[in-house]
Image (cartoon, rainbow, N blue to C red; front, side, top):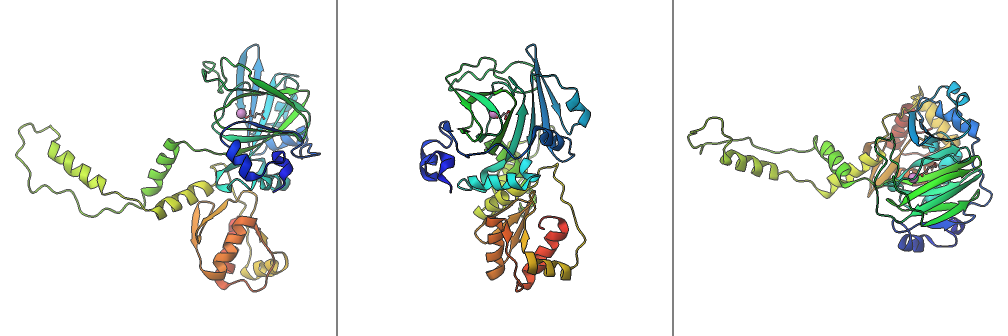
Length: 368
Ligand code: SIN
Ligand code: CO
């Protein structure tokens, strides 16, 4: 890891002192960083079908929110001030953005959400708020004044289309220049205000709520629970009130449901598929490609994950885009290397089963 991005701290020290605990300002974390997109290019991305984009407008105390994709004309009709454009998942569109994320490989990729880029003219922003995310806010072009607050008052502006804190009290503030970076833990109130035209790059790490995990896990387990037997009541007592749900029935059903169990492997499988599942708007570009052609290309160039593919592993089990794969020996070793490096170097001696699998993934548009 490049130590300048944490201001000279090692990953371990950063995690012990700051991660999920308190903000860290790093001056010149990315020396010379001015962003990799112009405001116009960002607006172009916001017009694309599969980009998640938002426009936040603020005028005379009122907030408005518009969801993309936008028509190009929308940007010609924007006021001079009082707005911000945010585009989520820029790492799915720009290889350099994906590479920027690898600077944060000291945090497990299982925690990574995405890279968001925002643009705001002077004074613009999304208002005072808090997130449930850990975020590294990297200043691209221009300047931004960041205010943070340790306040407990999380009262929101009523009826606003986005979550804006009603009473924000600044505890500390910093003016960030290009290449400076501010790390913020979840739930810390903050407010970023553009000083002149400003672009900010946010590397966000997801922190799912217990409720979200439980709901998703129950959905996942639906196809896996296998309980035997069926409800039986040879010991039935004659009923005096025919509509009454008897305590005996409740006891029996409760006992049946209590027999539901899950293993550590179920949890690993759930995590692997939940964390690599593509977001609903993501579409992969399928391709026609013969096995021979794929092999010839692999021998020359190797293979890499497309930007939209997510791959993780646990033990020897590999997860890609919501699916689990089990392979042994050399194939397993290569799959794990692909997950870690997001690419595999050229080779002519790929194991048969792995070559067939990678060919299938190339056709599905998961690798290229
Ligand atoms: C922004 O980049 O405008 C907002 C990022 C944030 O406050 O979370
Ligand atoms: Co925020």
